[in-house]
Image (cartoon, rainbow, N blue to C red):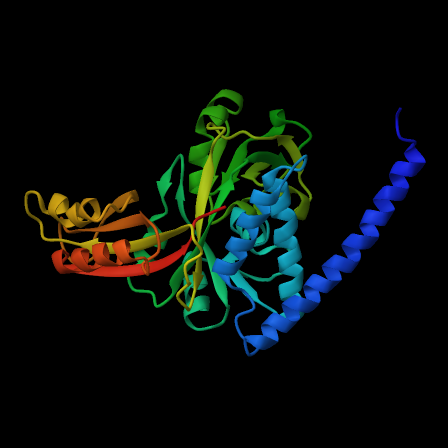
Length: 354
C-alpha cells in the first residue's frame, strides 16, 4: 500500500528538523576545532579530502557520490566562513572556468579574488594577498598551460590541491539566432576545443582570441553580431542568450587546475606529488633519471617536457607521482632522483582530485 503524500511530507519535515540541528552542531564543533588550532588554518586540504572520501564510502544511495561531495563541500565551506574569511585568487573576471573550479573545490561560501592574469594569481599567494590561488595547468584536449608551468619553476608557493573540472562550452550572444553572428570571441584554448563545431555551424564567422572566456562574454554583450564561447555562468552574468550548449569537440573535455598555497600539506591517504627537474643533455639521460621510480615501485602519472629559459635545446621535466613525499618509498625515490638530476624542485604533495 502506497504511503499517503501527507505522511511523506511529515517525515521529510522531521528529517529536515534533525538536519538543521545536526548541521548546527557540526558548525559548532568546527569552530571549536579552529580554536584548538590556535585560530589558524581554517582550511586543511588533507582533512577535507578525508572527510569527502569517507562520505563517498558511506553513501548508500540514491544520491550519487558526486552529489554528496558537492553537498558536503558546501557544508564545509559554510563552516569555514564562520571561522575565517578565506580568500582564494583565480584568473578572472567573474564567469571564468577558473572561478567554477574555485567553487567546486572550496564551496560557494568562500571569499574570492578575480585577477587579470595567471601571474597575478601567483603573486597574490606569494605575497599573502590571498590565502590560496587556483590556476589552470592542463586540458585533456589542448594540453599544458605553459604560463603556469613556467611560473612553477621559481615560485615560493606550494601545490596543495588539484581540481578536475569538466568543461562545457556554450555559444552565447545578444543575437536571437546564430544567423546574425559574424564574430566569435573566446580564450585561445576554448576556440581550439570547439574548432570542429565552429567549422560546421559558423564557418564564415571570424574568431578572436581574448584573455579569458568571461572577457569574451563581456565583449560579446556590446555587439549584437558577436558571440562568445564561455560557461553558462558567464551568459547569466553578462545578459547573453545561450544559442548552443556543450559545443566542445570532445565530450570528455576536462581542465585540471592546481590549488596553490604557502604551506606543505600532510598526507591524506590518497595523494600526488609534483616535481620539476632537469638533467644533462646526453643519450639515455632521461632513462637513468627516472630509474629510481621503477626501483622503488613509485607510479608516475604524468611527464611533461618544456624548454628551459637557460639556453638552447635545454629542457625541464614536470613529473606527477602517486603518493606523498613523506611516504618511505617515495621519500627514497626522491632522494635518488635528487642525486641524479642536475636540478630538482618538489612542487608539493597534495590530495588527489576527488
